[in-house]
Image 1: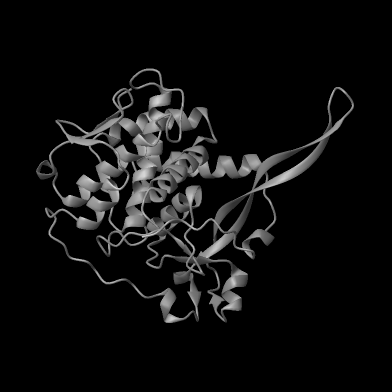
Image 2: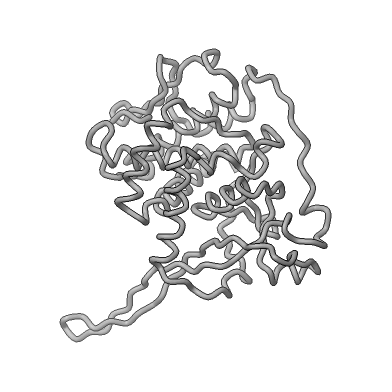
Length: 313
């Protein structure tokens, strides 16, 4: 809540850009409808990454064929499909990319649509008769298949990472250092929150959490809130009072940011007790703004990239 290993590569995969653009409203409406349906059923599909049930502690981002991670809304879309279909491989690729790897998509397999943001340059004449150019953002969609839907790929695409066993109540030195490197002021108190007024993160005692993973997941959530400060990303979603629409939107950004960070750092995000209440507010926010899940994922992605950038190179 809020009171007031490896950075993502943003390179564009050239083959994926060859796909035909889809109507804007169709893409936003389709993805938002899927998220809304999951929320109405009480499911947080972004908290069920591709192999969280099979390999506890080995969560990661969905990957392109060339090991470049997917980001933003595509992470949510692919995590959701993997959870529903039981895919265990993190790798996704287009039909053509599979062919170029001398592999074949199995007959009858249904692909998953992901999106790519692009810009259209348009010339316009202003009231003075002068010609000006402006860039109009739009989305393209294209279809990818999970490696588990493809035959003939090298073993690399199917191999599962080894299960990691750890003492659930032991502090993780690498994660401790990662969060310390942000230079955020974190102190021990009675609840988990970030205060804009004092610019401090409060966390309950480590020993009060059921597991180390749940502690770091909550800390990742609060550190995502911490990035909204005016001196950092200056993220203002219109929050005025506790529980209003702006509050719900910021909570969704922090929720997604925590999941993205957990995937990047290699641990499984743990659900929080307040999610049942949050789900209702998220449903209302998404029903009133069909594009917000895209914006929330984008805000979360920027927050995570900001936190990664604070780490020594």
